[in-house]
Every structure is written in structure tokens, then in C-alpha cells.
Amino acid sequence: MIRRGPKAQVFSRSAEDCFVAFIKRSDKLGFATVKIQYGCYKGTVTVSADENDVNETIIARAKAVLRQRGFLTLPMAYESYKVISRDNEDNNN
Image 1 (cartoon, helix red, strand yellow):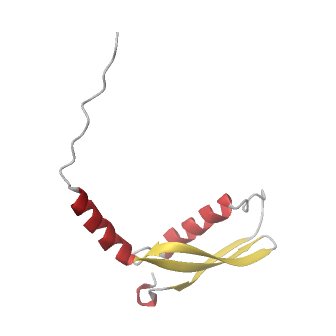
Image 2 (image 1 turned 180 degrees about the vertical axis):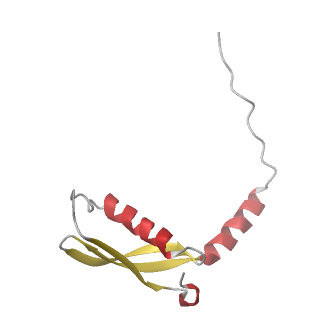
Image 3 (image 1 turned 60 degrees about the vertical axis):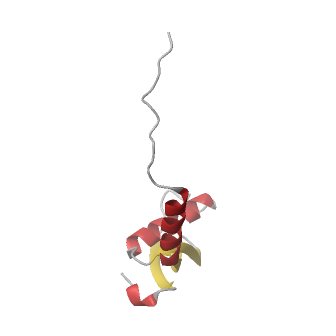
């Protein structure tokens, strides 16, 4: 007996509409620099940031980058994160 899932969804957006939406989204993308102190490590990390992103979202991205690089492995350590610059300074949240 073969079970079949629901029918495939058909999207009404054309490839051109998707491309235009991507271009509009990429115009809002920029970079943010986060100052980090974790245990005895001090440094900065640069992450991508939308102009509407709040600082907590940017810090979460910085933590994800550090985890991928092998940091944030100590069971207990002092942690400090601060967004020090964005390439769109007029929207600091």
C-alpha cells in the first residue's frame, strides 16, 4: 500500500516577482558590529543586520556566530554583549 501526501502547492508568484522582492529586501540589509566579552575573550563580531532589527536580535546572531566558531563552551563565564555600530546609524534600536 502506497501512501500519498497532500498535493504539491502551486505558488502564484512568478520568478520575476520573487527576484524583485529579494532586491527590495537586500536594500535593507547591512552590517552591525557587536563588542563581546566572554570569559577572558574580548573582541568584536560583525553580523548581517536588517535596518529594522532590534539590538537583541543582532546580539542573538552574534552568539550564533560564536557558537559556530567554537566559542561559548564554558559552563560558567562572564558574558557581555553590546552593539557598538551599525552601517545605518539613524535606526539604532
